[in-house]
Structure formats: C-alpha cells, structure tokens
Length: 331
Image (cartoon, rainbow, N blue to C red; front, side, top):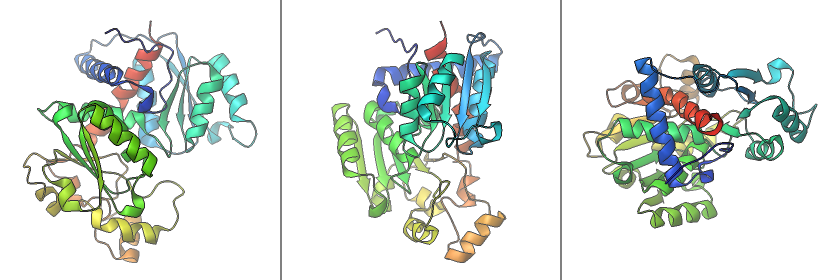
C-alpha cells in the first residue's frame, strides 16, 4: 500500500491510520540510522518552518530545531520573546500570515483548538509539538523506543501507564495503542481517569485492531506482566491545587517495588520528561517536605537504573519530528 502524507497536518494520532503510523515509525528508524552512519541526505533545503511556542518546553523546542536543521530547513522561533502575543492578533490572522511565508508550522502550546485553527487557516502542514490535550510527537517517539528496546512486535506488548490518566501523554498513548493492537493499562485514581466518551472510543478501536485498553485503579493488577512502566509529570504548566494532586497520585509513583511487582525481569521504565526524581533538587525537596512524600512520579533509584530508557525516548523525539517533516514536506 502506497503511503503519501505530503501536505498533511498531524494534530493528533487520530489523524493517522495504523498503516501511516507504521510507515512513520519505519521512517524514524531509517532517518536515525542514517544520521548515525553519516549518510543522511538533506531533503528540505528549500523549506522554511515556523515554530510557534506559547509554552516552555526545552525537549519539544530542541527536537524541532535539530530535526529541521539536519534536513536543511530554516527554522524561525516565534513566541513572546520575539514579539508574538495572542492578545495582539487572532489565531486566524496569525495562521494566514505565517502560511504565506512558511512551508509548515510547528505549534507548542496549551490549546488543541489553537492547533486546529492554525491548520484550518494557514493552508500549510501544522504539527502539534504539544498541547494540553494531545502529544503525538511524544507518542511516535515512545513507539519507536518500545520497538528498539524489546524483541516483541508492538501488538504483543503490554504497557502500563501510572499517574494522571487524563494527561496529554496518556491520551496520545491510548490512541496509538488502540490503532496498533497494544495492551495498554491506564492505572490511575478514578478522578484522574480519561472522560468516558474518549475511553469508549479507544477501547472500541482497540478491539477492532486486536488490542486492549483498560482503565483501572489497582496498581498490582495493572502492572502485572508489563513490558513497559510509563509515567509522566504530575504537574503541567499552570496547574493549581497541588496538594490534591499529590494526595491522589502518590500511590501511583514508580518505586523499586513497582518494577519488581510486574514479575517481568525485562520491564523498562519510560518517562516523557521533565521528571522530578533528584533528591537534591530544591523545588522537589520543598514539595516532598510540604506534602509528606518521599517520591514523586518516579524515585531516583528507578530513574537511574539499568531498566530506565527515559533518555532513549527523549532522543527519539528528534527523529520522530524529522520523520513528520520529511513525510509531509519532502518531494
């Protein structure tokens, strides 16, 4: 089957079929290998990409810039530091202006609606680098990392996500798992479960593709046999009511006993970063003291263990974004 993604926006993995996701994963692996071998060919030397940043993210920002530069594209960072502010111009007008100058737009912000409006009015491909609702480039990087760190095909893997089941990372992982037949368990306190319509949709899609999506509260059941234990930041930019979040999420922190309780000696730790794991971190220490917890999302012992593939994930964000750029702009 021929795959052609030229001119396409990717705002969520719902925008892609299973075949298109597999195509992108092969392209990610190919581009990563060619960079390591020194044989990468620049396919975007005449392209200009606008990177519209409305939130801070060193990981998304760095990955976009390196991906574009590797392929010969020019990148312009647009944000508060460069004079852009949402209060001075509508999203529609910003999109129409940028679409006249640039071949594509990367968006790193909060609102999924903003990403959708950029895609509607710019008439060029728009890539969701991160919103509060969806994180497709992270999910692509995660899938590649799983393939690289396991002998199993994706449709035989068991992944347990611990923490905030409503987060952009958990939701994007669920969409990916439902498309590709992965057994995903979202292990979370009930008041942090994804909304019912979303769960019904991804579980139905998973059944059609031979996979399974389960949302549950019992950690021991959720992690049993897991090939990957995945957790993500408990706090996003602008979060409030920290005490309530810590109180509910503390039982879902990844400690050594959690990794052992999978009864799978090959279980790997995944984390989308940034992670509060370092005991000497001043902010983390204040939070731990204030709320009476010795461990946030993941304890330092697990984060720094041989089971941790966190920085493989972080590295793979760049070739994942590069694959999107090449697939939609090259040729």
